[in-house]
Structures are given as C-alpha cells and as structure tokens.
Amino acid sequence: MTQFKKEIKAYVLKNALEFGKADPGKILPKLFQHGLKKEEIKEIMPEIQKIVDEINALSQEERQLLFANYENIVKIKEEKPRDLPELPKTKGKKPVFRVAPFPSGALHLGNAKTFILNALYAKKYKGKLLLVIDDTIGSAEKPIEKESYNLIEYALAWLGVKHVGKIIYKSDRLRTYYQYAKKLIEKDKAYVCYCTQEEMKENRIKGIECSCRQFPIKIQLKRWKEMFKMKEGQATLRIKTDMNHSNPAFRDRVLFKISQRPHPRVRKKYRVWPTLEMSWAIDDHLLKITHIIRGNDLMIESDVERYIWDIFRWPHPEIIHTGLVQIEGIKISKSKAQKEIRSGEYIGWDDPRTWSIQSLARRGITPEAIEKFVKEIGINKQDIIVPIDSLYAINRSLSDAIAPRYSFISNPIKLDITNKPDWKTIEIPIHPDKPEKRKISLNNIYISQADFNKFESEEIRLLHLYNIKLNKNAQTAELTSIDNKNIPKINWVSDKLKARILMPDTTWIEGIADSGISKLTKGAILQFERFGFVKYDKKTHSKNEVIYEFWFTHK
Image 1 (cartoon, rainbow, N blue to C red):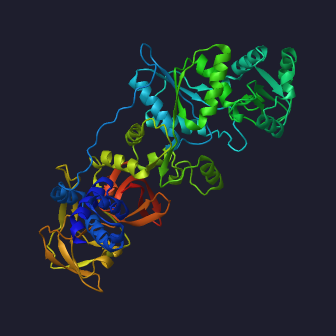
Image 2 (cartoon, rainbow, N blue to C red; image 1 turned 180 degrees about the vertical axis):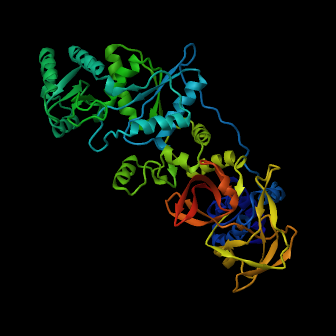
C-alpha cells in the first residue's frame, strides 16, 4: 500500500487543517479517485490510522508547513464567497419580509435558518423586515411558553436579525381576524361546522360536503356568533373549497377553532382562535408583505392563503419555499428540550443538548459564523443534510485568528525532569500569528496521564519548551535537547489552576490550566492548545478552591 502513502498524507493533512483534527472515515473515499480498489480497504486502513495519529499530534502551524509538500496532490478548497440568489419581483419597489416565530421555546439552529435568510434578503434589497410573533393558541401538544417571548427576542437580536417598528403580536389582532371571518361568511365562502374531527376526516376522504355547509348565510352568521359561547371541540369555522380537490387535506380546511386554554399574554380574553393559514392570509395582506420565505412543510398553508387572497381579490405576495435542513450528527427537538427542562434533566434553554441559539452563544459559536453557515446553504429547494462540522469549520476560521492560546490538561501527573535548564520563566506566544508573548513561571511540570501512557519510553517535545524522554514505569523524564524537532508534541502546565470544561453532552472534563486563565474576562473565547476552542464561562468556589469553568466550542 506504499503507493498510496503520499495520497493518504495529503488528504489527512487537508482534513486536519480544515477541521482541526483528522477523521480516518473522511480519508478513504478520496483514495478511490487515485485507484484504490474495494478489496484493498482492509489492508490500507491501518496505514490510514497510523498517519492520522501522526498528523493529529502536530500543531496547525506544523501541518500547514508540511502540507506545502503535498500541494501537487490535493489543495485546500479555496473559500469563494457565495451570494444569495436573486428573488423574483423585487425591481421597482422595496420588498417587505417578515419573520414569524412561534413561542413554544427558544429558537434553535434549525429554525433560525429561515429567519436569517429573511434578514439577509431584507438587507440585500434594502427592504423592511417585520417581526410578528405567531402566538395564536397553538395546541395542547405544542403550547406557548411564556418565557419564549424573551428567549426569541434575545436570539434574534444576537443573530443580528434587525426588524423595523414595534413587535407585532398575533394575540393582539384577534378582532381583526374576526372581522375577516365574518366577511368570508357573508361571501358564502366559510361556514360553521358542528361535525367531529372523525366525521370531517371521513367526508374529506369521500369528497362529501358536510350538511353544516348547506345552511344559508344568515344562519351561518348566527352560528358564528354562538360559537363564541360554545365549549372546546363543539364547533369550527371552515372555508368552503371544492370537495373533489385532488388533495383531500385542502378540502374545507379549518379557519377557526375553540380553545379554553389560558394564553400567556391575553389569558382567557379570547376563546375562538384562528389557524396559521387564516391569520397569515389576513396579516400578509394588511402588513403589505411582498415576499414570504417558508419551509416546504407549509405548502398546504400557502395554498389556503392564496385561496383566501383570491376570494378578497388581493394581490399575491411572492412565496418561496425552502427544503428542510437537517444537521448531521445532532438531534434537534424543541418539544423534547422543553420536556427535559421542565423535568430538570436539562439546566435550561442554554443547555448544549437543546442546540438553541442561547446554548450556541454560551458555547462560543459566533453569530457571524451562523450567518455565514446559513448564507452558504442559501435557499435549498430540496431537503438536505449538512454536517455540523461545516458550522464548526466556519466558526473555527473566524475564531482562530483572534483566540489566544492557553494550556489545559486532564488527569495531571507531576513530572520530574533531570538535567533540565535552570529556567525560572519562559515566554510563550499568545497567538502564532501575533508578536505578543506571555510569561509563564516554571515551577513544576505537569502532563496528562494519557500522554505519559501513550509516549512512555519515547522522546517527545513539551510544546514551546524542550525535548524529553519519558522513563518507563516512573513519572520521570530526562532532557534530550532544547532544539525543536519533528517529534510528537504534548501539552503541559506549570501552575495548578483548577479548571473544568463542559462538553456538548454535558459531561465535565476536569484538569488544570496555566496561570494565564486567571486574567480572562467572562465570555472570552480562547483555544486550549491540542484540546480545542472553549469559552470562559465563570469562576466557582469549592472547598476553598477556585475552579475556572469553560464551555467546549469545538476542535
């Protein structure tokens, strides 16, 4: 397999430079372009793993220098700025967009995409962006959460989604919806239905008109008035459509339903609530929305909106549907997160397992990275799967240029080094691309137990310091040289400042870090060399000890 050694090394270096750490699973597919055969996979995998381990032991700077020797095989993909595709019907007038979050919890990475797209297009065309909180009553399975209002406002502001004017709440617009419901009845386009859900479902499937539909307008208006005194489930207002429509779901859709559940903002002031398509059909016209960007899962709602616009002879806003974006490697469920927060399993909406905007912000993902991530996806017509590493790679490229470097090790052991120089302090670069240095006192040398076990009896270099050989079966080492060599490098710490890092699965990695972390300000983003990017969260006290807490961002 030696004929593939250069190719393996090239792609391993490329993978490590792009994602901070090489993944052997990403290398194999590339080798098929160079003639690898399926029957050779079993034989070549150990070689891949060996080279991956070798490259992962290097710093990014060392990888970059080494990669220069393999540029003839593969080059790191040059970043080309991607612009958003043009939208139809934008010439000659300023477009008006809207974002419409439903307040059932914090915004997460998945549904933030649509909101950012609307904001980007509003900026692109110098148009307006309205924030309309879609707080109609919802359902018992997906109720409105009072805290969601503030969570949503914070997330949108943090993401840079800027809206004009005051926030519009649908729960303040019920009287307007009632007026247009009455007009639909007067046009003989809507009727009050007493049928059960099961009866209506069967009528839809068979294409049979409900008997409630046959009453004259005068009686329908009376039934509409009576509906406000009825109990939940006794009646609905339905729109009249063709009961032979090709899509049974479109046949006589519900426009209003009764709900006796209290609303977080208006409590029990209203009992008759509009459906999404009814409220939006009215608001998109009255608010003069010109472009609607929404998911493919709302196509039927778009059809009903158009149907209502045609009844009133209103012009149609341009509707652009986008495919669902699934993030590979993570599971996002707002309802599950809400349940786990209530039970106390999650610490709150900033728990990293929620994948909420609050959690990403606390971890150190920047709004600029999320915006760039969304912009690169653009308006996808089909459902797509995007690896979470794509977001991490963008955030890494933005953070790498500014994040200072510090040292952290877990499971530390004290290492006694013989023949070492009598150095009291050493200066270490704060950042490889900046001239500034920070001074570290050389009191003791601690390394991780894992590194000691891995390199026992081998020569290694203490990063930024000197080369040593670890002695087998003892926590000692001897100096071999001061000059930098192309040998494995490991991290070390001189000061025993206790630190711990919260990982995305909410497990803690505990260890020690160098004294530089004591000068960090809350929210600082930094890199623990050979560990990953982290965000400084807070300082706690336990048993008269100070513990510095960080949240893990990514490799």
